[in-house]
Length: 204
Image (cartoon, rainbow, N blue to C red):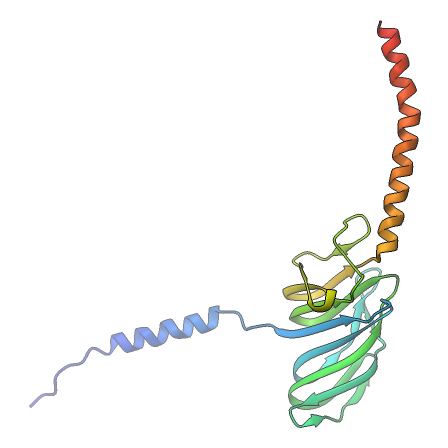
């Protein structure tokens, strides 16, 4: 007896749709957490990496890659520290796999810039007493979301970025800005008010 015919197009079509979904869905970005230390002169980074190499760099004045000097560098896997070797300025190599890299790097003039070779989900944690929300003296690169963190800290997050930048300030700088603004406003009123009065008299 001839076996009944089964329509194989259904499972094949479902498999094709699943493959297209997997191809079109972007892979989740790896995570990097940047914690600015109290005092604002350095930061500690915890970065997830996949592969066998990682580069530490920062954008230069013309956008060029400038090797970044880091301290307290460690490469970790689930079992603990992993040996690594330097293969160039700002470049290290280690056994193939998934690792976590931790290091410390300087912050200059209250301006933090962190760069990666591939897109990362980045979180920058600013210490208590530091802010970024005044656009005259603070700045967050596009795509950043500002939110309160634990213990009076401030967090800025990005979903998929290769370069993030934050310019932060302390309360005394904001007070100084407000003071200068008030002084300049008073000076402007003193200079402009007599002119307005004289014009009004001429109009009469």
